[in-house]
Image (cartoon, rainbow, N blue to C red; front, side, top):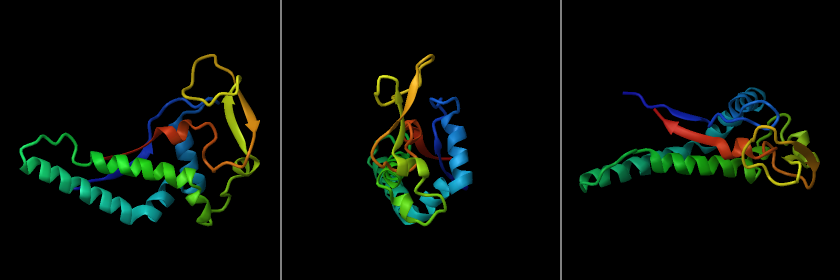
Amino acid sequence: MSLTLHLGVFDVPEPEGKTTGEVGMELEEKYGLFSEFYKNNENKIALYLEDSVADAVASAVSGNPIPDPFGDATGLIDKRFKEFISLQEVEGLGIPGVPTKAALAGLTLRTRSGKRIRGVKKGQKYKQIRGDRRPSFIYSGILEASLKSWVD
């Protein structure tokens, strides 16, 4: 039996017409974002998975149900991926084009009223604002919020 760890996103609309799936694929093709995360966190990910399975086995031995033996690990992997981006760790890896020009310029996308985008709503208007330098890959915040890992 073979298990596969997937790193991806919930495929939801992005404000400017694409989906998080399309944006994620572009970021992987251009910068290797998902591959770089895995490469730089492989040992932590392995420990998360080992601990999660060990906890699931211990739970089973105790007679408790175990809905997902990888659930604890994938939650930690998701959190770690978001930290990898928001703490700007990805920017110190020497990836060409990172930090991105938009991040250096502090460009972010917000609702017309200036609020952070929580979800894309039909007919809602958005505006690009310039502020303080921000982490790369957090333009609207939708992609970062949709990052997800799972095991098959």
